[in-house]
Image 1 (cartoon, rainbow, N blue to C red):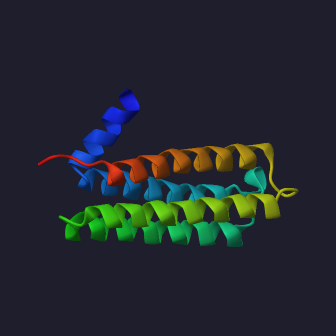
Image 2 (image 1 turned 60 degrees about the vertical axis):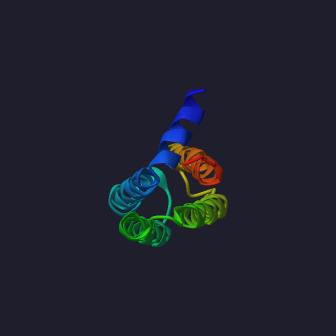
Length: 136
């Protein structure tokens, strides 16, 4: 029931979804573009791929910020949009993990597994919140 309560709270105040997703994107961008790049040898993912992922996360944060300030009544389509974008990002991340499988260290696997799990949870929340119907 707790999961449904979170979805209901986010659907009641959809701007929270954009803040939550945007904050997550910024955290991802920080770790990918700064921490993992600085400690590339401990994670194993090449810098080029890390910068691409960090750049995408920054773009997602900008999208969320714009949605936060610009959406009102039609927020559901924008939440679904970020959910689909997150899903694509998730598959790209997974593809990069598979492509760089032999370069990654245990720490690299752990980081990307955690990031993908968080993304899957967030995607699920976003789709469920966007599909929740309330009587107003």
